[in-house]
Image 1 (cartoon, rainbow, N blue to C red):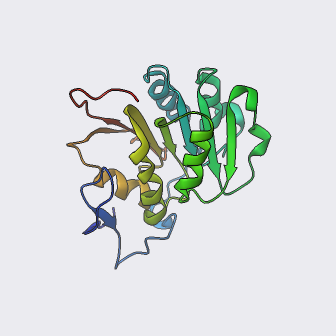
Image 2: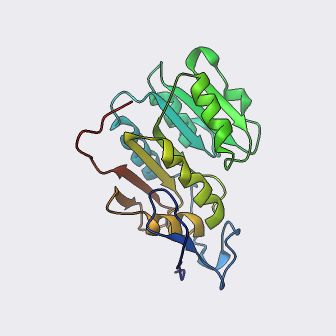
Length: 215
């Protein structure tokens, strides 16, 4: 689908820095020649993959979601994360649009209107909520290679048993390129919903390291 170049320069958790240049622009969200009609942006199958991935994390203490409530709340990734997070789990939603209607301090739900590349601001929100690491990271923001690379770097704060879920890993350039570059020596990665009219979703888990535990 894409010709992915392996550029030098370290990125946490990746084998190489992926790029579609010079043939394509690494700042483009989507190339229309790969479009297939999709009846629902975040399909029922996507919802179930996300739900099971979250439920597989034992007592998550911090969830970070990049790209907040793109669909009606019950059918959105945000709705699933908020419905299934433990009451004491900190949720931080990051979006370039205002999603403050979701904010609920008593439920430890906070949204930030910002460019997700500003990781320092998210980390400060985590620290204010008493969270040192991210237990569950969901990436569904701008789908260019460069933006997905920036979003992937939140993995530097991923808990030892943390999970990353990425949406749109079937055809969008950023998720496709970043998924291919993930280092299998460090992570177990799997694609789901790859058949039929679906944007696709992937689940990435750290490989166990002897003696490593939660902090």
